[in-house]
Length: 185
Image 1 (cartoon, rainbow, N blue to C red):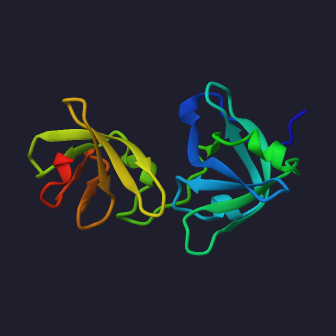
Image 2: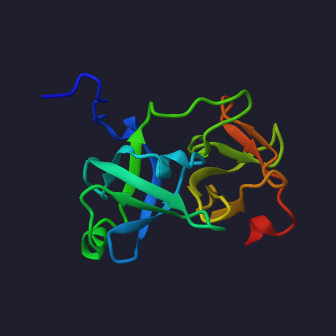
């Protein structure tokens, strides 16, 4: 029996939005460290339903009981309902924290979701050739864009305004103004 007010679980991968990764256990009572992939801290601090996905499995529902950001770090420490021991928490390391794709907070004009950067072409000028495609976003204090080049290299580019001054989501590209040597690493 389903609750009329409860959201239904999406069924395909593109109906899900990854918002963080379980990276470690915190303490002895089942708390976990989450490396966020979302710029919305409430995803890790406000109690409610979330989903965890292990590689190759479907997301499964879990209740977030509480969460807090570690001072001076981009890592969050969360507690899930039913996870009361270090051993139970260890079993969740490596899983991805998910929300339904339609659970995106609203955006102001000129704003975008960081995950929308994946798939964009990276260019050195507005009408220049593509030097690669954004393949991932790595959070860990500062966001890094992982860019795959046509010749198979992987570039790690800091996602800061000085290096990525323009993002054109609708047109499918972003502008890079890298310092000398950054693209040669």
